[in-house]
Length: 325
Ligand SMILES: NC(=O)c1ccc[n+]([C@@H]2O[C@H](COP(=O)([O-])OP(=O)(O)OC[C@H]3O[C@@H](n4cnc5c(N)ncnc54)[C@H](OP(=O)(O)O)[C@@H]3O)[C@@H](O)[C@H]2O)c1
Image (cartoon, rainbow, N blue to C red):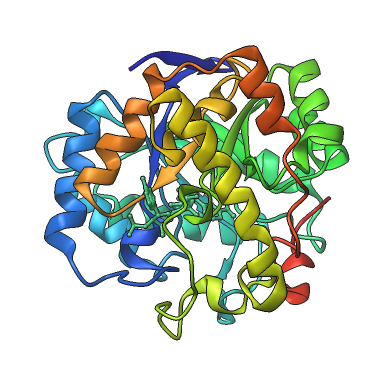
């Protein structure tokens, strides 16, 4: 495994997102033992960046990591997120990045993660009711207290990134980025490069779609995030299958799997980019991690970069309102 720097923070080029072990996708929360084995195997293979959030579950994903990382904490760059749970009473899926809420959130996350510090603490979504300067100032206090090492933002737009960074240095922005989700390239990535901030792409396999293993949505559980997602429904889904087929074709040329090709393309976009793949299975963690040694030709990178634009938005209209674009 190779390692890169997100500003001053060294991480494995490929990280592991733990969300799907507890939340979001079919099969979540059904096999803790395999999830724990997956985490341990990823660490053995050199993965250091491990990602969670208080909203995943809520709370159960952080609790799982707290149990799984006992005795292994020092091997991990542990990232979690605040701002989608209002601790003052409104609860989960309510934006709240007020300083008081950030302080309440960090105490809960530290306890659940069984640690005395969070390596990378992200605001999960920008809160339009709280100036980001106040949030950044609070995270700065947590850094001074040793509870947090580095500050991140997720799905933030250029203006928010600049304003937050002016108060406390932003180490990484975590946003959706993959072969079929290219929105960060135009406005966000140039600002990150100007300010020396790293990019952590989430859903780098397109929530599993780019691996070519999802040919129908019939088997998604009722509460699977993808069930109501515009890209995974109706005609859009059928049209998007052509994208997965193109990735598969390059994979056949390279002698790699489609997941590895999708990751190798992201890695080729720069040494300031560390995607976090999501899986709860050992074999897939092994497959995804091995993408570190898959090399694409310039022509393959260019061809993949000009795949047809995906049909459908990455989020429903209501969810998209929380994204800064
Ligand atoms: N900041 C945010 O707003 C935000 C939003 C979403 C996610 N995230 C973070 O980003 C992480 C990654 O996102 P994601 O889970 O959507 O990523 P992803 O890697 O694009 O997709 C994960 C899905 O792909 C499947 N998968 C993984 N590897 C595979 C392989 N080699 N072959 C076939 N299928 C494979 C997984 O199934 P199995 O688990 O069954 O293998 C899962 O259903 C999350 O865990 C979370 O930490 C952040």
